[in-house]
Every structure is written in structure tokens, then in C-alpha cells.
Length: 375
Image 1 (cartoon, rainbow, N blue to C red):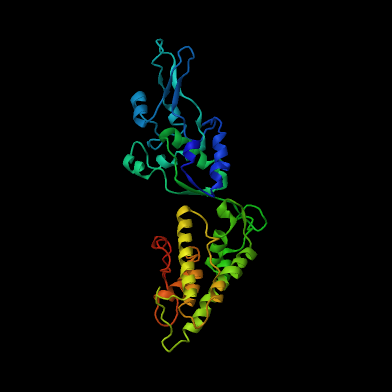
Image 2: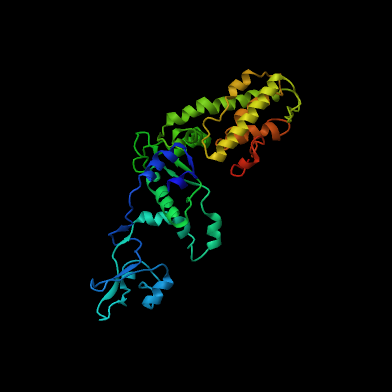
């Protein structure tokens, strides 16, 4: 299990050899049975006479029907493998020459984590059906859950996949932290210990909430306390400066003539500031593409749009749109509304600057799929 864990891309990466790796390295025996009534019955039948011991383990409905002559059915006549219906299946012990002992199912059920760990193949009824589909879709490309699942869901899937297929259950995993309410306790609908979402959207916008979450430590496995002040801080420190940068450019660009300013992409300039801004755009774009491909967060990608303005001037109309675009397009996947309003109008709308409904053409085309917006 430890060796296969090295083939998994973990975000944050310290979980691989840290919390998950140490848990796998010190794994103890897993008791998969539970002495409960409700659950998935363990398909094991044993003789009720210790003088004639026998144990039968069944792997399919066909095997059960072969030995018992029928399948368990509920009151509606439907096949039902749960208790008490499956417990009604008994038969004489074939190893008892006296014919007095009976094969009865053991009363235990599976640990519910066994059910959870079986999800990748159980959901498609593999291996009885969809064998080709499963073989081409497993291991999973991506999975996400909170950090506690390193000892829960992530772990049991890894255990069963290792035992059954000798390969990981997933290739990429994001293990995020816990989102807490403003009082530091787990966020709860009954306690209402979090800002009203509708008020936040009306006052600060959906992008503000999105940026607050995606630039926080929760993406790195840490806990996050959600407060109105924290959301507004992201607005003040990033979104307002970004919007101001865009407004600053359009103020002068729309005043440049009766028909306004028409942005065009050009790499012909040898001006040092143009070269610097083009380099900054490419570096930012490559950083985003690399980080998204590896599942990293977005918080460190943003380029300060005000700093871009400091190296430009109202007259340098080839510099300024580039400077504004860096700030606008860098977090496009996480500020889609703001980005669609400013970045695309810089490069895709001739004449007067106005709102648009597409994603900035400066981002790699691979990032566009999930971000298309309506005007």
C-alpha cells in the first residue's frame, strides 16, 4: 500500500508521506464485520453443529441460487439481500452424514466503510457487468474530500484497490480542510453561525466568496473560519484594485477618440516595458496552467494589477491593456464574473469598452471549458 501511495498526486503534497503515508505505514488489521442488524450481510454460511464444521462463502447471486434453490425475496416478491430475508436461506450441511446439521448465515454485517471503499466498482456492478468500462475508468482521475478522510474513505478505497487490483483507487486527490462558522465551530444550518450567503452575494458578489475560499488555507488542508470581514478583505485587497485597474485603462482608452480604443494583440514592440509585461503575462499564464494541472490552489497566482499600472502610463496604450489583462485573466477560473466583465472586453470587443460574456483569450484554451458565462 505504501508503494502504491507514491503513485498518487496528493494536494497538499505533504499528506502523501505525512498524515496518509504514516497511517498506511502503521496500518493494523481491519475488522470488516459488525455485530449489527442493519447493513450489508456478510455472505458466509456455517454449520450449526461444531461436530460437522463447514463454511461456505458466496460470491454471486448465481452461487446462492445454485445451493439454496432460490434467492432471498421480500414481502413484495423482490430479490432482497438484506436481513431478515437473506437469513431465511438455509440448507442441510453436505458434510453431515446424519443430515441433522444446517448451514445458516452468520449474523454479522459488513463495516459500512467496506461499502464505501467498494464504491469504484460496486457502483457499476463490476465484475458482473460493465467490465470493459471499469477497466478503462479505473483508477479514478480525481477525488476530493476533507482531510479526515485520510483515515476513512481515502484509506478504505486504497486498501481494497490494493488487495483486489494491485493499483491505486485514484490518481489525483485534493484533501481540503474544514470550513468553520464565524464562532470557530463546525458550520451548521441550525446554529446559523455563518454570514448569510444571499447578503454576501448581493453586497460583495459571488466572486468575492469564491476568491475567499479558493485563496484560503482550506485548499491546503487547513481549517477556515468564514467571516464577513474575511470576505470583504479579499474584496479590498484584490478585487477592488483589479477593478480599478480596468477602470483606469478604460477611462483613458474611451477618451482616445470618437470611436474609442480598439485593442489588438501585437508582439512587435521592442519597448522594455512592453517586453516586461508580455513576459509577465506568459509567466502568469504558465503558472496558472501548471498549478491547475497539478491541482494546486490559486491564491499565489494573482499579479498585483496596481504594480502593473506603475510601469505604464495613460499614453502607453500598448502597455496598459497588457497590465490590466494580467490582473484580470490570472484568476479567471476563480473570478469568472469579474474576468468576463473586463478581460474579454479588452481583447474581444472593438470600440467602446463594455461587458462581455466570454473568458479571456489570454488563458490557455484547456482552462475555458468550465468557465463559459452568459452576458
